[in-house]
Every structure is written in structure tokens, then in C-alpha cells.
Length: 118
Image (cartoon, rainbow, N blue to C red):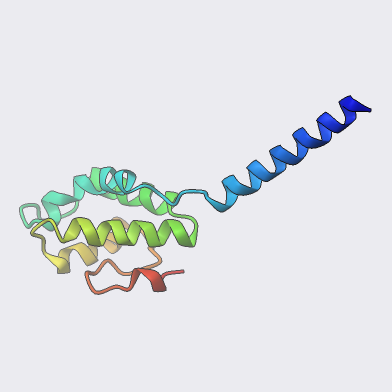
């Protein structure tokens, strides 16, 4: 009987922990977003005529990683925050997904409302 109670308590604790982990699941990290997009800097800063293959691969990787609404919102906020720190051509930045053949769920723009992304 005592063993049965211990197992029930253990299973309950595991269920609570699993639920907490799902609820607190972190959105995509800003370091992931930045590392995926660093190869695009030469293009958006104006020195490259087109995005490099590494830039397009990073955009594709980021797009694949940002599957949930919290992930997409976090990626958007990170991109906006990073963009505030760099001098870049916003017109070029907005063209990257199309030039790389990637369909993204939100426009790459400093004026996008990241909280409205779903």
C-alpha cells in the first residue's frame, strides 16, 4: 500500500512538472535568431548586392524554428531590438525572405507590431 502511494505521488509530481514545462516553454532564444541572421548583415548594411547562401540558410533555419506564436513573436522582437543597434537598409531587409524563397509569417520591418503576430 505504501509503495502504491509513493508511485501515485511520484506520477502526480511528474505530471505537474511536465505541465509546467509545457506552459513555461521558452520561445526561441534571441541568440538563435541573431546567429541565424548574422550572415545577412553584409546585405542589409548595403555592401552586398544580394543575400548570401549563408544568409538564406539562416533565414530558412529561423523560419523552421519559429513554429509557434510565442516563437514568432520572440523572433520579431529580437530582430527589432537588433535592428535598433545596427545601421541597415530597411528596404533590403524586407526583401530577404523573397530573395531567399522563404515565406515568413510577418513582414521584416521596424514598424511591425510583434504582439500582433500569430
